[in-house]
Amino acid sequence: CLGMSTFAYDTTLNSANSKVSVYRYQYISNCSSILTISGNVATCESSLTGYYGETESIEVTQTLQRKNIFGGWSYVDSWNDNVDYHKISVTNYSHGLDDGTYRLVSDFTVYTSNDYEESSKTSQEVTFAI
Picture 1 (cartoon, rainbow, N blue to C red):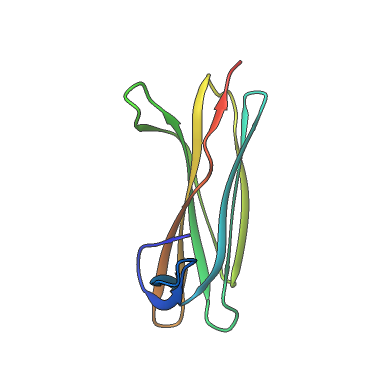
Picture 2 (picture 1 turned 45 degrees about the horizontal axis):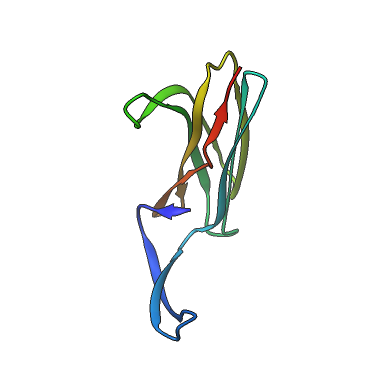
């Protein structure tokens, strides 16, 4: 997960014994964004686990994107979902894909009683040819 809002830093040592700062989330334990393509159907899976007792609700927006001729990313499909719980796991499908390279971007917002935290996770790129 790549944090976009509140997070804290820990100091740790890397393999060269140099101090490095790594971020840790306040309310997010882990998240994932997984794209698989079979035939011309994309399966888009997003999940997040927040800390029990802290997380009150979670929203997720899944966006399926296709690499365009300029090397950027174009919109293909999107879905929104939410739960009033500390975990979310959603799967959606996009049919009728054209040849190309695709990725899934999962944007999460985790809410507590008086705060929130955002995270975005991008899947590995998947190339599909008919």
